[in-house]
Amino acid sequence: MYGLGRLPEALSGLDAAPDDAEAASESLCRAMREGFLAVFPEGETVVGEAEVKVGKDWAAVH
View 1: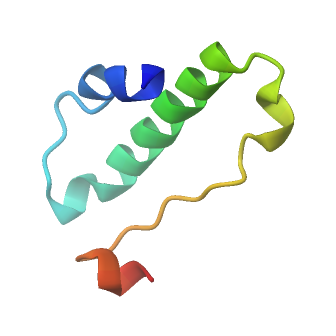
View 2: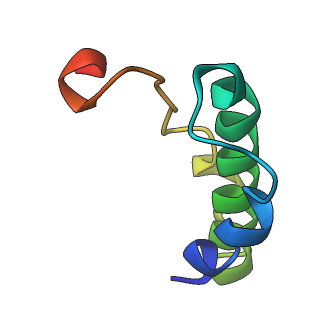
């Protein structure tokens, strides 16, 4: 939940448009990583285990 609380600031100024997908992806990853490490400070070894995928909808990226 800590990471989710960081999302509004991390995604501020971005739109749900294809042109912003890469910037949103980077901001989302950074916010969730920071949130994870705030809760699990020893968790650096598992950071990077998840990946962001960009697509039109859920089915397009799975």
